[in-house]
Image (cartoon, rainbow, N blue to C red; front, top):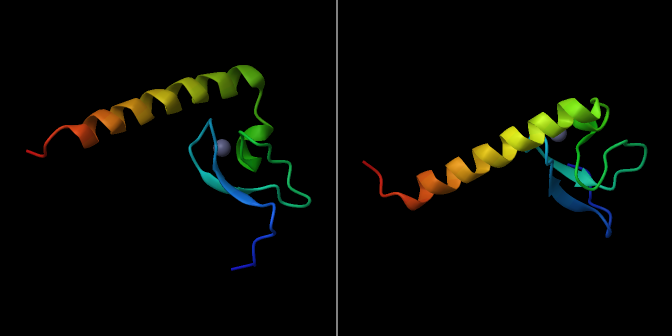
Length: 68
Ligand SMILES: [Zn+2]
């Protein structure tokens, strides 16, 4: 694994939820979107962001509920 630059942080993509390092030299990724999602049409990315937010809230509910 390459050594992280001092300024590099692990971020979660708002659209697909993937963890990615930012900023990476030569990468198109932005603060909020990974390299895969940054090139998507804005309207498509908005839908992904909505679904991603929904999945996160569902995951949170599952974690709060006792198992079984
Ligand atoms: Zn992404």
